[in-house]
Length: 193
Image (cartoon, rainbow, N blue to C red; front, top):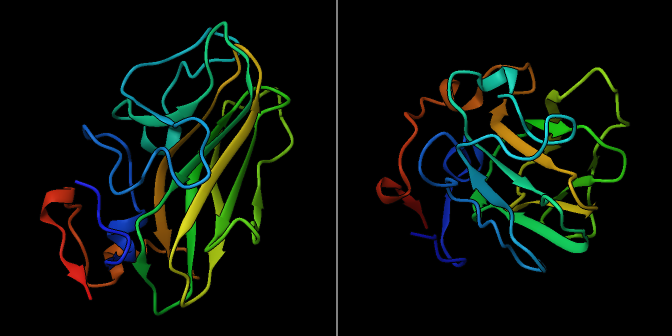
């Protein structure tokens, strides 16, 4: 069940997600400003050259990720916004995630609190890579929302995100060191008011 936008949850509940369960954690896959939604998948998709045909090395045990792109359909005019739940953050953290990107063209931006400040843009393509591990975005205290914005996906091109984690400035798992948190299902969340 989605969290109401007026409520705020712990940053670990709002952002950390492996996408290995039957849900996309607390992310809205068709967030504000979307013209099309991200898709949650437990199966490989696309062709063997540009499709997601292997698990992220950072989360290799189980197939689960969110992606944008379509076989045989140009969606280059579509905007895909994956929006976090509103969260409370009292310390600086690093948002870390794995990015699947095999083709020139598709782009990902990670924006903080609005579409005006997007400190992350997807890297230049390296033909030897499928997954770009541990992509990182600095999140200062007071931030309330994160947006993953993808676009420019021509037919048969894909972009995927997996293994979203919150890390301390030293690189440790923030959700483990914060007296936290067994990953909880959305039904068991404790809301912070």
